[in-house]
Image (tube, rainbow, N blue to C red; front, side):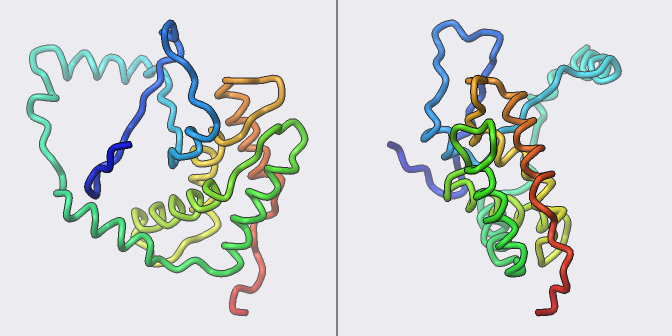
Length: 182
């Protein structure tokens, strides 16, 4: 274990095409990653744009930071202070608990995953310029936060099956629409 000073963290990549000599992480280790974001193959227009950008220059050579580490730490602190209504806290808990009882799921979302869903929802709200979390924030980050934490029966290592299960989970738990003034 090597502790990194804030705001630094580890970003891991996985290329499913070149798996020789690599091994999938166990669930306990995957659970420590806030979310899994997959990049699809670029569209024709995107691939053409890549060619244009790299034709006579190297964009990575002119890449400049958009903020310093102190600003990142302050944003992290600000995100944690965003308000989450108790009804939404219950919704987050309901989602993760439902994952543990979902048919076709061998291993549902852990309490660490419940916390990750809350934190990611707070960060999403902050990026949107709000001081409070909405149900839509939770749904927007739900698949990337929850999918890699779901062990789908008979589909070991299937990222798409995990995404589908996370989508089904988000559809199965009713979104709070009650009077939140309570």
